[in-house]
Image (cartoon, rainbow, N blue to C red; front, side):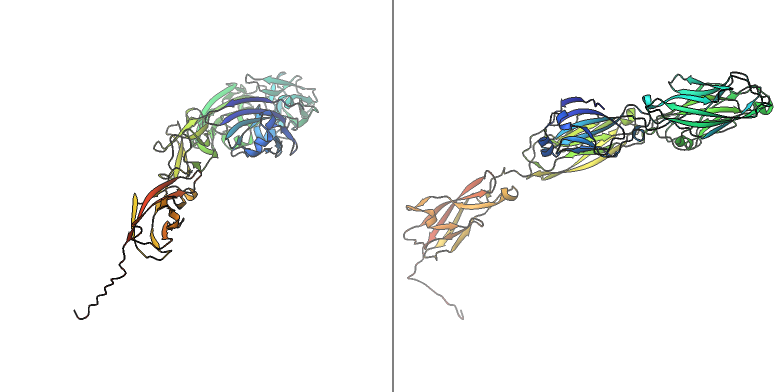
Length: 558
């Protein structure tokens, strides 16, 4: 089968590239069957799909499609039954998204599921029974049960056949809404004395290839002297009911009259060709024709309901009328927030306008009740931008400083426009990663220390201390002596410094008569890339020690 591929590519601001690709495949394809080469159709290479960790996002629906990013193709993951997926809706399509990262890219994919002829026409009942008066006039009409074919288009219900056709012919009635109903029309008057019981076979055929069919038996009992059928006052009734309406709510009343008298003029009502799920929602009083609510109606499931009502007299003559019930929406669904992509952490030097999250918001309600406003806390350095319908981007609105705020809890709120409005929230925890933007700082502008001459080599003199407000490797400090000259000799020949603690030690013994002080420069350097550093001046004063006069005073008893 030839597949048609329609490709649209558009570029979205906020560093997100958006595109759309569409495919068309028949239902019931084997698991693993090829749908299309999405990498080729989007102009992407397979390596881009691998590096971008390409994945598809289907929301909360069953996954029918899978992405083989190592091949760049879409395959059937699970069996797709168009009838289960879409019912009678045409066209039938799966909608999902493909997301790539580094940089973030976002594509919309539509796969149309076309019908194959895999369902024969069926009747709800195996047989229908009629009691028809022998005085029924030629041309009398009897509404037959409509066959149901879950296939659509040319594969759907096509025609009916009735055998034997001695007394009755079939007539197909086309209504204004495009639907067709079949009637059995009397063409030769019945004679109870000649034939009291009849058995006919109604066959429904579709238009597929090969053609499929279904049958129903029609059993007719011929009665005497009932020559007027019921007549409905309207061919079509229209009504409306608000969703979540209470049980017992009156929908409408169908009326039919019969010109006969006595039991022959008594009309009863029943549902015809009623869908199983509707039978649990609506009740029809068979005597009065009043339709009332006995279950829950949900606008999000069915916006309109169509019911066929059959009016029947005691002789089996019938007429039918259609009831169209419109379900009125109320705001009973809060928006649903789906975070499709979220980047955390982000560097503290990220530019304003950087996209950190892509969010999809869905509201099952309609019109105003389904119109969404997406916001976040205005006091935080973020804002939300609308990209496509129901899609939003969370972007940065100002610069970060990790040393001031290391992380943010971002509340995203989606609110609909109903009355009263409903809303949902989700919280995104965004961490800010460090960059080396702070140099080490000493705890003093300069240092002065004293040491007595004739000290021991290796003796600890004192320590310098610096701090760095960055984090991890960027805050790891090493201490170094700047290479300067003291009396023509390098500084390192007089003192040394512990690179980790900042402790300064004497390398030699000092002599006050030769040197009164040492002037040093100590550098504190962090472990960033590139590293940052700062210097401080250190003055070491040598104190005189008079070794010839040592006075020891002992005080005892004074």
